[in-house]
Image 1 (cartoon, one colour):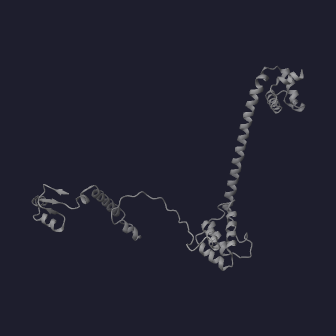
Image 2: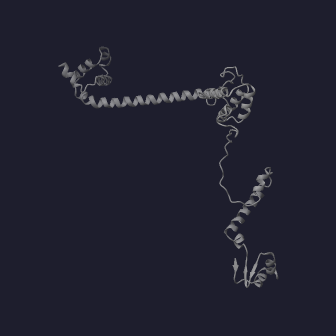
Length: 289
């Protein structure tokens, strides 16, 4: 910053230290150009960025004093808090790294395809499993077949084992090339089987409820449609006309059971008329006449 009205005498008087301005000139904290005095890097210490650094430094000092009793075991972390830094947003918890195939693998390499299948199955020690499979006399195709069988076992029960990738790796390390691929697998976790069964029952129950609700909805719509088509006619008829229509549409046994239950007989008559696709109930009376 340029200080046009500031002189060395004024600086000595403000600091109450004779020769202070000359000392600042000697160390480069003050620059004299003719009759003008300049404070170099004035913005660094007195601007907005300087104030922000000062606030950050106070915040870090407060943090260190508050947590001084805790032992610092990570030197890298200790080094990262020696200077005040701008606050950063809290990052999400890091996910476990996904293993990546070796750079030496090429698409034409059959063992590379087998190792890629293990990486896709999230086997962390895929290279060790491949090396063991080679030592046991296995082939890339057999390894891929074992992986595929492992996937089939997990389809009905995804949590068949506590760590499916570890089970796959163990199966490959204990493989006997002449043994069936279905042999050598550990039994499923009983808790996982119970959970899978419970989930299947819940899914079946939910499906049945949906089907029942859909059937009730269809029945409700059908009843409304039959009531719209035949209800008005039925209400206008006398007891004799209703009896003749019921006897015509219903079987003799059904009529004997329902002839005193007018509501149920009305419903059964409407259903029978709808099944025969009759436009009106009076058409039955006309045919009988």
